[in-house]
Image (cartoon, rainbow, N blue to C red; front, side):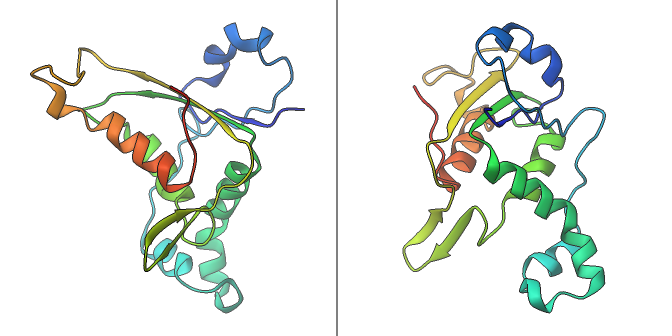
Length: 163
């Protein structure tokens, strides 16, 4: 069975037309009715403490993030439906990215810079929506923080969208 990750506002509605394309899948919804919390100080302390050195409080602080990263790494297909809010991504999506963006789990940093750690033949579909045109060459192009952010996050994890 295809393990598809659909972390979006309404994965059921998004998938209705795609059921014929992906007849068997696992849905892991994370927004809308079940928003992911923002990272906080205990989360940061836990993320930068080696797992074997974490106190019970730090283990609890990072528990949801560990689950989300495990789900993310286990997926074969990622489908992101991301509307533009105030020229960028919604805060709920940003909170999700903050929870799964973990050094040593899906990316690493060394003298040469960032290196994505997501392995395998993973597929990515990004569906964006906005209330206007932000295409290169238009007067509003410089206000598009959504597309560059999404591309940067995917690049960081070594995920590529098809053009």
